[in-house]
Image (cartoon, rainbow, N blue to C red; front, side, top):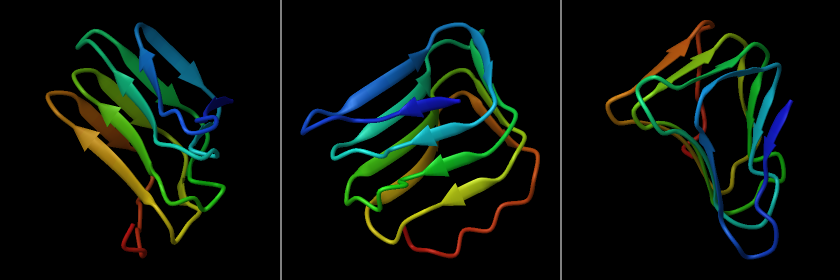
Length: 107
């Protein structure tokens, strides 16, 4: 399990700088913006379990970004909040969803 959690008032960015995999991914449980991003076309992150956004229902921005690499999501995507902004960003990279996703909240 990987947890990208901001602490206090400082935003945090975790950069994937290799080929990595994890079982579950939690983005944003703290009180500031949090981002996980790939940084190179040769780098990737594969999540075998679930990706969970904003478990604390905070009013911040939580991002999973395939800036220039690849993100493979093999489990479910869980939107835990009605507050804040949960988002996927893709620049020149790729995000692949193994399961269908249904996002029913505006955030």
